[in-house]
Length: 156
Ligand code: 4NP
Image (cartoon, rainbow, N blue to C red):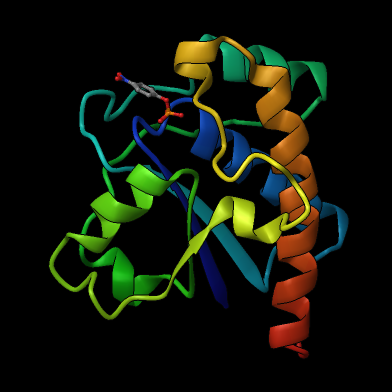
């Protein structure tokens, strides 16, 4: 089993969107038994809550399920549990890095999956209100990530 976790600040807007989109792609490829997808926030304000209404409406529009998804906080144990830790912006990555065990962890910045994009961080729609912009980036980046996982783990 390959374990993937997306990380943002609140775990209600960006990382749950990435989780839902990535799981949808994994289902389409018939890889649900091989690749597990999760998400978490570096903050704890929204723990237990479902995704933000903007993320829910966007996913509804693309008929992508977010069933049973609730926010949780990223914890140090996640460093050993997950093979791919993917942070949506630079401050998320710095917050994860500063946790116990974070110094030696491999942390991927989501926008490094899309080296040709001018944006180098996934903008936070909690402040911009632009969930569609996030979807376009997340959708493209998750395609790249899935290809990368399959290259790095040829049996999946
Ligand atoms: P997210 O967006 O990190 O993409 O889930 C945010 C959600 C909540 C807050 C900030 C960002 N907040 O400050 O409550």
